[in-house]
Image (cartoon, rainbow, N blue to C red):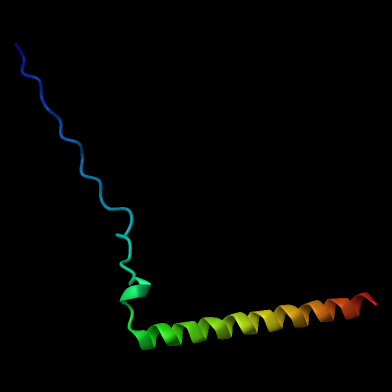
Length: 63
């Protein structure tokens, strides 16, 4: 009786890098968290100013 061969599945190379290990908010030091909040607040204020100035420019163009 012929012996059945067990075929191994071919090894598949990793197609993607493993997920990045990002630090959690709680593990960041207090000065880093404070600076991050300040920078995010500044970005939001700048974005709001740009949006408001664009809105005003568009309104003037419609008149």
